[in-house]
Structures are given as structure tokens and as C-alpha cells.
Image 1: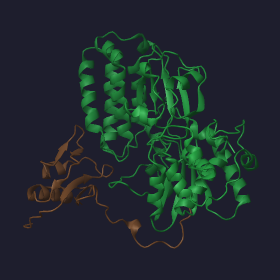
Image 2 (image 1 turned 60 degrees about the vertical axis):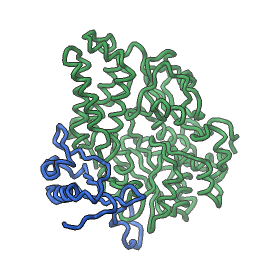
Image 3 (image 1 turned 180 degrees about the vertical axis):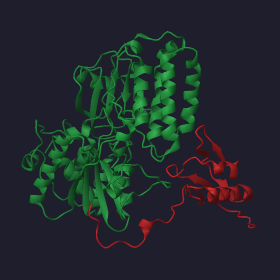
Length: 100
Length: 424
């Protein structure tokens, strides 16, 4: 990608519900992902610096290579742990409450 | 008005049938609209009674800050097989719970209240239905209260599974990457609170924070409801002052005076040794032992029982109750149960099984969408630690008498066939 990002860090997160244990991530990002005995990824929750371009790129490969799209790379900014990603629910508000 | 330092509070005026609205307003006074409800709630220091022990006011503030329509969800699912507190509360003082839910709705600005009771308990469903009907005739303003009856499953009472059910008729936990995470029904933010928490809010809204803090400890104020089961002569649901020694609670229920251990907090909880029964029953004292009040369950296991056998039955059932969404839970929990079965059989393979258990606990922890696997891991670790003598006996090949006996002390429901499990 060419650009060295000096600030901030990133973390590779897996949605365990979507994950079906294909194991592609462990091949695409062997430094970040290990598989447990059932073939599901074990990913360290500690953020890595964005300046580590090699790790960041392999995390992006793993994200794109996941057949269930269960992985995502989240940027972690200083001060806050997880990044509040924009959600569908934060958009414009519906007019009436949905009957339960 | 109830005296500040007297018990019962939540069960005040409890009879054999649920209190009608008129009776309820004689026991407690009619719910007057307090102005500074949120400030009172903050000053009261109420923590959730569903198991996690999260400060209720923080949840309320989080939902209050959301835009759009909001919902209050009263969680009376009672997923723990040994728990009876929410059902007892709803079959004695259902209006106190509904009062609290209305106050919470007023605080966050919610337009609808969903009361969730498992459909497997039709008596309680009937009581709640009548209580809601009584209130409907009384006040047409205010939030609408609906009754919902999801199927009973262990994880169906987990808040994201409950909201998923209300949103999409599936009792499956959701993935929440960020913390804190706002659960949504459609687009509306949902405030999920345990039925006992709502009942406590109903009291705080009436009598204020100072009244509430007259019982309990500084960090864990108020009274709480505990379900005492296991090796007791009177299995009972008791309302206790937080900070009462565990031994006193056990004596009230007529428990074995010298138990091997008591399970606190339910199947996702941990064991308290029989030697530590003088510990006060409140989160700040139990936290020093790595325990918590959890969902208010105390299950007594006597010295004659085998801890490994009890743990194995619980873990096998908990593995079966997994929603099978996440790999570490769907495959890991049955693996833990198999390892425990190996320890139970004893012999040369058991030593390897114990080492494998410890390792697998570390692998599974924190990798599910909900806290179900973490609860099982906590239970397994605590069992290996507290029942070390039983484990050692099994490792030596001397299978203890308790393991050969057919008497068990923890109530574990029968396993259903996997295809018979109902999630929607």
C-alpha cells in the first residue's frame, strides 16, 4: 500500500457466529491467526501498530480471503478501545415504533 | 410504606396468589411520579440482579442517550434451572415489577415495555397476563406493556438472545464487537433489565435512594432474592439482606450444616468451599474469592457427594444447551464434558484429561459471541480447584463413593434430542 501509517493501531476481529472454521485466515495471516484443535481461529485481542505494514497487510488479506466474511480489521484510535463502527440503527429514525 | 430496615421488601404482603393492583397499592403506596427518578437511581447504587452485576443507572443513561424509539425489556426468562426468583416475584408481586418497568420506561423515554416469560411455565405467564390486563384498564396513558413468551433455553435469557427473539423470533445470542453495545429491536434501542432489578427500581422510585440503601452494603446495596437448592431440607426462595453470611442463609433453608461446597450464581458460577461459609453474601466480599452473587442461586453439595460427578452432569448439560453458533462453544464445551467423563472414570487416562481440561479452558475462554462458554470455563476451573481431593482420588484410580452413588444434588434437566431443541 506504500503509505506508512504512523499513528493509531489496528486489531483483527472475528465474528464467531459467522466463522465456520475454513481456516483460510491462518494461511493468509500466519503471524496473527492460530487455529485451535477444532480449526477455529485464535486471534490476539491486543492492538498492533498501524506502522507495522506487513502485519496490517496480512490482516487485510485475511479479511478479504475469509469465505464467510467473518473477519474485519478495526482501527483503534488513541483513547478508546473498540471503534464504534457506524451501524444501520444509527441512521435516520423510523416514524413509528414497530409493534412487537 | 415499608420500614427501611425491615424485610421482606420485594415480597412484602406476599400471599399464596399474586397481589391484585388494589392489594398492591395498599402494601406499597400508589406509585407517585418522582421528578428526579434518574438521580435517585444513581444515588441508590442499584446493580443488576440478572447475574452480571452491572450498575443499572449506566445502562439507563446509555439507552437514554440514544435517538428514536426505545423499548424496555423485562427479562424474567430464568434460564438457570436452579433459579426460581423471577417466577416467584411475578407470582407474588407482579405489579411491583411492572411499576419498575414503567419507571425505567419513563427514565429512558421508552414507548413500549416487553415482559418476557418462558412459555414453559404457563402459570407464571397467566399471572403476568392478568396483571398487565388489570393495569390496562387503569391507565391508558403511559407505555404499552406486552407479554412475550419465548421458548425456555439456557441462553434464551441472555440479553442479546432475548432481543434477537423480540426482533426476529430466534433465541440466539448476537455478536457485539464494541462495548458498550446498544441492542436494538428494529431500529429502537432496547433496555434489558432483570425482573428483580425492575422490582427494585419500583421500590427506589417510591421510597427513594436513602431508603433503599438502608439495607445491604456500600457497594452492593439493597436486598436480593436467592434460590436455595441442593442438600437442603427446605428448598426455598428467600429475600435476604445483602451482606448476610452465607451460613445464615443456608441455616434458614435447613441446609446440611457442614457441606463440601456451595455453588453460587448458577451453572455459570463458581463454588464456595464449605470452610468459607462465613463470607458475607454480597459481591464485594465474594469478589475476593473470585466469586459473585450471579443470578442468586445457592446450591448445596454435601461431603458425601462427588464433586467430579456433579460437575460432569452440569457441564454435559451446559454443552448441550449451547446455541451451536460459535465453534469454540459448539465443539469446546462437549470436549470439556468428555474430559470430565474421563476424569470420572478414573484410571491412567484421567491424568492427561485433567491437563487437557486446563488447556482447553484457556483456549475456549472469551471466544464466544455471548458469555455462555466463559461461564462453563469458570465453573470447570472452580470445580477442579474446589474438588481437588475428589479429582485426586479419581486420578489414583480410587473412584469415590459419591461417584458410584445414584444420588445427585444439583438439579440438571434431562437432555433433549438435538433436533427437538426449540429456538423460535
